[in-house]
Image 1: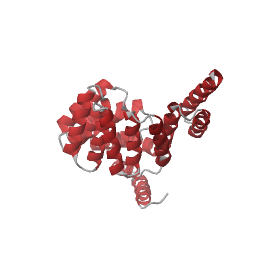
Image 2: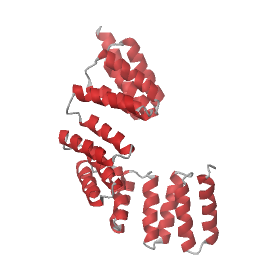
Image 3: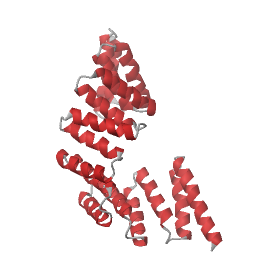
Image 4: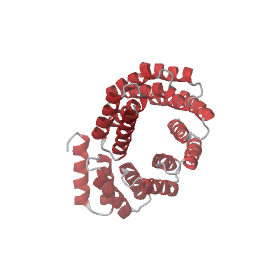
Length: 280
């Protein structure tokens, strides 16, 4: 019995390491072997479900969450995660049922309120989303994602100062989250604070050097402030990261034209047009 337990633990820990290294298929194989060894222990089931979520294989993730619920029907987080997988499959009704079940099990589940808010936001109900994010934050005052998402909803409503205040709080709690800087940068542009936007995009890039959108948006700020050479450099970096991004080509076309490089501008414009039309 001890030998079987040790074997199970080894399979799970190896699967965890493989997952962290991005070896998703090998991680799944190890978790599957652990489940076969001990099908009534939940750890490998939940870990495999997480890998399926990461892969975008939402139906397989749901199957694993179903299995996890049979093993332990009173774990609110399992319902939350199954709801998330269902939502990714556009099963909004099923997702809401799962979030409601999670809240019955744990009425202070900040994660469930966050997910309900995300559904409302994606449906265009920004005020309803904000109410859900408010509740999530009451349940967990240090929930950086809830502040960031509430900031997004305020931004969508045009409440830019409220949005910035929420991004500030999200960054205070989780200063290594590039999305909060990126989204705050977007709002800074809308308020005309180009220097602040530049600083936010630069910080987002420092945290995530492959953030193609941060490079493109910083390029836009540089273009708007007359730094055409800097804009070209940012758009070029964006294109290197994602050669199929028409926005970066379009932005670089404008910047090149502003420097007098008409041929380069035309080349970029044609590439952007081709990509927008679905070409490669």
